Image: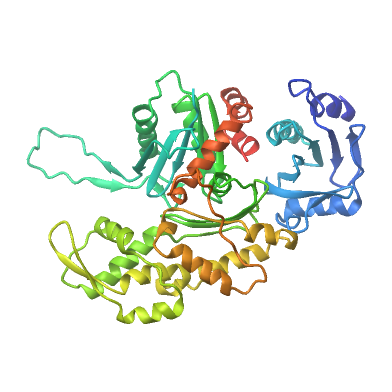
Length: 132
Length: 360
């Protein structure tokens, strides 16, 4: 299966009632994009660096906020070295760290944080099991 | 069927159907007695009842006892029928270890067979109870003190702080002080607890506390007939929250802690947090506590003064004691109908760790 199929079929899937995530991507921890949805924002290198740092040292992004292409997300409860969660108004982002990559899911109202987490983390767990 | 909301504290367990404008239907002590089984061969042996606390410092420690307690609450107290269990919402203190949350969700789905589960932190719920989604909660309970800044419903865990100090330590202090001034009197901890609730007071400020050296001594008759004198000790109990050195702790007083915590959050949010400070938890209902808190707040070092939120008029008087429960009832009315909770299907598919993904 190609990476693009992972994004299109598994991350941008129908969550029920024709709802989907706003954008999703699988990005290597070095910053290279493995696949992304059509409207996924471009991440800047320093943003990727910040995200990687926050996984290894949780709490680095919280004071300043999580930035994705300049859009600021407030860091909320995540899981050290596994998940970073951010909130922006009624929407937000979930970033799951796998062995070699970062799985991103961006959602907006009415999709709930719980729904985004389930989708992103489930795919992330599957990739970890496959060694990716 | 209404969802159930359970706020299990170190001293009192509050539970009831999710009806936000009422107090919880059941407010029972969490402390339990282990009944030793009858042994007919030895009728002359004296059985000791062992009291145990399933919940210590806010966290569930004794799972068997907790299961029994919940069984009583849910089936006998609140009228659920076996086979027809509905949705349940639990409150957690700050920094609840993941393992404890997972074990709770597992207990609920596997033993109690609930159809839906949600867990939320007490700090956020207390804010919902006063109609806010951002602010700072100062929760002074029996087993712990939590100070948590919350922004738009999300607790800022990096900034929040938990102290392993609470009403139970104040009771011990009170017992110690009374023991010193009334050496001949025998006091049990539960007597001291009742006395603390009746007499504990906060002096208006530090200088007033110094003056209480010569305050009037009140006489109190214990249920067993002994008479004790209570003088300055009652003010020491309240003062300990503002000067923890009385308890032997090298910490700042509670208002100072609040200001320090807020200063670690990004400055654009300071005003919002400080101007929406909520006091909750049983110990905050001490006479004079709120006044003293306000006074210390006006003296504190930050530019913005902490201001306490006034609860809405339609809420009951003792909101501080049940605010986490009431917030839970409010949240339950939103979460369960919108299916944002953990369902049995989610649990079966993903296992206990699903609670971290779906419950915020």
